[in-house]
Length: 259
Image 1 (cartoon, rainbow, N blue to C red):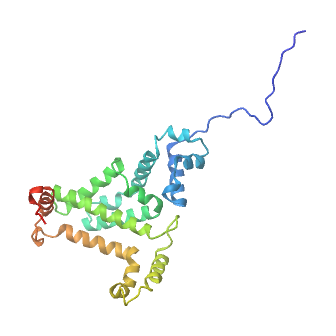
Image 2 (cartoon, rainbow, N blue to C red):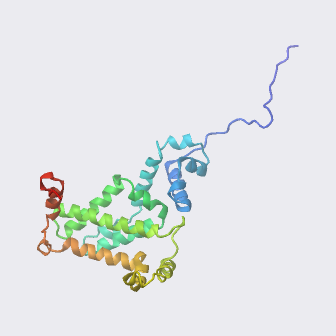
C-alpha cells in the first residue's frame, strides 16, 4: 500500500494571513497623531507604519516619501477650514478676513506639531489654491487692484502662519497647547524676572510681552496689517509701487556705491 508523505508546519510558524487593508486617510490619521503626540520628528515613515500596523513598504505604496505625506497632511488641514465663514460677500470684507484668520489659528494651533511643516514647505495643492483664491477675492472686494490684492494675500499668509508658528514654538513640549490663560501666566512669570537695571523697557513691558501669544495680540496685529494694506498709496512716502523700485535698485550692481 502506497503511503502519502505529509509535512507539518514547524512549531511557531504560521501561514501568512490576509494582507492588511490600508487607506490614505489611515496613513494621514497616523501621521497627524504622531505629530500631535511627539512633534515633527515623530512622524517618520517607520513610525507611521508601526502606528497603523503595517510594514513601511505598505506606506510607500501610497506615498513615495515623507514629504508627500506632509504635503497631503497640509492639504487635509487646509481643507478643514470653513470657507463659509468668509465666502459671504454681503458681509464687510474685514469681518471675513478676521473670521478666516481666527478659523485658521484655531485649526492649526490644535495640531502644533504640524505647523512647522506647513510653514516649511510649499502650499500649492487644491485646498491651498482655494484658500489663495478666496483671499484674492476678499482683497478685490476691499478695492485693491489685482497686483495689490496678490501682494496683500501673501502678506496676510505670512502674518497668519508666522504668528501661529511663533505661538506654538513658545511651547517647548510636544502635544496639544495648554489653555491660553495658562500659557500667558507662564510667560508672565518668566518675564517678571527680567532685570530692570539692564533691560528697563523690557521689564516695564513684561505683562504686554506675556500676551504676545494671545488672541487679543493676534487680532491687534491683524488689524494693523489690514490698516496698512488698505491705506491710500499717497500715505506712503514711497507710493504703492515702492517695492518694485527698491528691489530693482538692490539687485542692480550699477546702483551700488563703493564703501
